[in-house]
Length: 371
Image 1 (cartoon, rainbow, N blue to C red):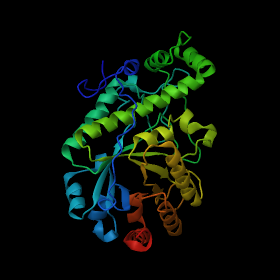
Image 2: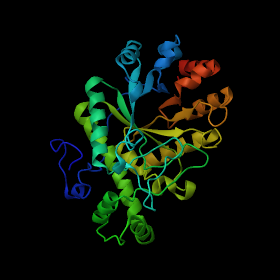
Image 3: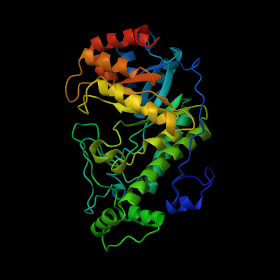
């Protein structure tokens, strides 16, 4: 059983433990020529709705769209290029919805040996499931064979959980037999127990730090594997990552312990980091946007041999409460300050629901904010 074509990767003994997951390796840095790619001013979601409503990307001051892969089509792609707008494609890496329902063995298993329920609207997946690896890599290849993109932005790069809420949902996963077996081999230890609850209890009591490190490694292997495919097929395209913008100590260290995210590893692998700075959804003040981007810039400056660029994504949509026009202007302005070299907002629907926000974005993107 393998997760990818053996002709693409050379597997070290470390990889055999993961039954074929690609090795975590540092991305080859891509030089971003700011004369070609100046300060990025974009919209995330299905930006084609703006075109359908009678707007033009260039007249709104945009120079980039960040489009969900399910919303990408030839007409939108050609329209963006005709208006000198870069096309970056969101890729739903570990979103398991519509897959786990048809592949029960891919469902993330909690410490009680049960299927972990959906975390609000999000449904993850067991990231060691070989069929899911094939499913996602085939989708990525299909996109890259069809479109000459400016970049791929990995989304949902985390173990099953929900962080886009003031009260996060943080289950312990995945304790399926496949995961505990792979962990046992990786950590070179014998997991004690006759069933999943007993094995999970033993791991959490006796090998918790090893368990967290292994989970983070599995996640990093997904990122590096996607990077290798991108380098093989479109070496000039950028690899971006949308990720949870918690500080390391937030929620008792849940960024690493539960989501599996090691920001320093992302720094080493990505060309662009896009922290998801949804202040209203996370019950944070607008000033938090600047606090986080400053922190991330400091992390990059001392932890990386090269500097991935920072393009925050900020909130415009009214969830769970109204994001006022003034708030929208504030988070857009703060998020665009150094160390950021680009900005995008979520989402196109929020602009259409409130045309005042369109006017704010247009003014900012046309020069008041950035130029």
